[in-house]
Image (cartoon, rainbow, N blue to C red; front, side, top):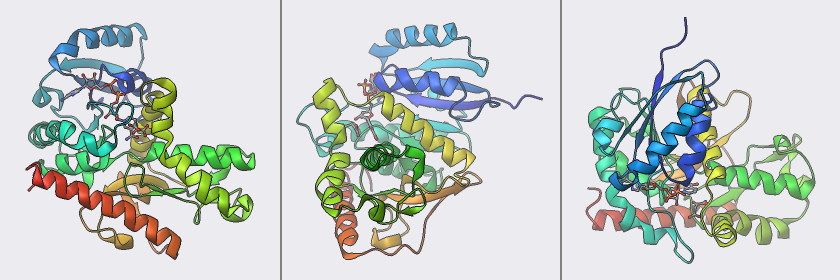
Length: 330
Ligand SMILES: NC(=O)C1=CN([C@@H]2O[C@H](COP(=O)(O)OP(=O)(O)OC[C@H]3O[C@@H](n4cnc5c(N)ncnc54)[C@H](O)[C@@H]3O)[C@@H](O)[C@H]2O)C=CC1
Ligand SMILES: O=C([O-])CC(=O)C(=O)O
């Protein structure tokens, strides 16, 4: 018997990321080739016309797994009985803006959506926040959702991980599949720390294979940290297809498990692991099984990594204080 469809809510569905994401969800890349889905799409009222066009295109793909599509400008409707929510809708950063500038502009969206999820989503709801500043938006939504377990709110740093893997693979001339256990720590921002000290390339310590600490410090880390800005500079718009791809990877692995694929990076509520203050939604290396994530424990953190992880956690702490001051969280 075919599985019953899973309701997947997507906000900002008529936006750039939405335009890549929806087709991949509907084709089975999010939840696997045997799992039908119903897409529940949320947009602001003025974008509903454009969203109608996207829905027409979804219909025209005749995806066998797409069991239905609904659209709404009301979060209470869009999140009804949803088991997965991808919170993409937010104002993107434009040239010269830092993510902090977006806190106020986008924060208010996530109080409303957190409450709507809490009131309307299915008991098993899992939430990925993509809209920036993603970590702190996830915190705001979580704090506005008293009926949802805190650990169901996550934010996306998988794009950073994928970018970092691609940089390493390119540097040493191996396929990306050879690069494993590459963790992103902290905030999805310019303070994030892509950590090569625990990564492996072809089963060997990545730093031994790369053999160039200066490259790691002076090229690799800044390139990954600034990749979003570099794409905005080059494209005149922020990353969209790669962000959608990373969102698929994040939810796929969370729901279906990381198996023997090694660690992945997810921003999850800190339990104080590695000295990251409890409650901050910070990126860690995690593994997933049975629909649950767990932070990889017992890693040795040297002084270099310590400083980087602390700096990004400090930025997250400042963002939390700022949204508290704005009254967006208690
Ligand atoms: N975490 C990550 O790695 C990444 C995050 N992003 C972020 O993702 C977000 C979306 O990016 P794009 O799709 O390129 O932007 P976009 O501007 O093309 O689309 C955003 C859509 O969200 C909609 N929207 C705005 N407020 C909404 C609300 N309250 N409810 C529902 N929909 C709403 C807009 O109407 C628009 O259609 C931005 O915040 C961007 O910075 C982008 C790339 C990577
Ligand atoms: O940098 C931005 O504003 C968009 C983004 O989050 C990314 O590409 O990583």
